[in-house]
Image (cartoon, rainbow, N blue to C red; front, side, top):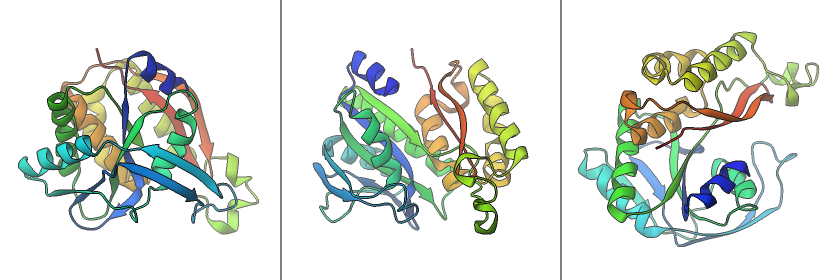
Length: 248
């Protein structure tokens, strides 16, 4: 909610979420419908998230502009306006909390990319920045994914209180190291290690959401010092936090 409060204070009217729970296999895809309404139960963790009602306004103009810009930059991208294309977990969960502090329009970008490169996702981020600038919009950009993402093996889940613990000490140490790098603004070094970090620490969706975020920020030219607004915590074996990448 703190992030939404700050977005409201800055006049943001739309949130664009790069969603690592929306899996795609060819091209890049944007859910740019004008309204999203329904009831959601997680097929991954139905014991935790069930019968969650939602009703949000979309921003089709922004979604279309991102798809057009990305395709022009050489990365084939489609924006969709389909009532039957539902929002995924990585969009609905942050919206659930943020909407309590600030009701924003929402656009969702698929960021679980199975055959795509980080370089392509970087271009998606650049297209997001270009579209926002062209429309003179005030947009909150959210990279919705974990840091490390190694779920506990089922046989070990209950014995290790798996809902509230990390599955790998190596992953935890790497996550904390990354947070330190972000806080001191060492983004150029982080980007050099991003591919291996995503691979060896099982980054969610191969961390394509992170590549999109950095693409929008200017990649390794970004020098902002990040602010951790939620202390690092584990969830079902994965590493979680909320971090603000400041833009001046």
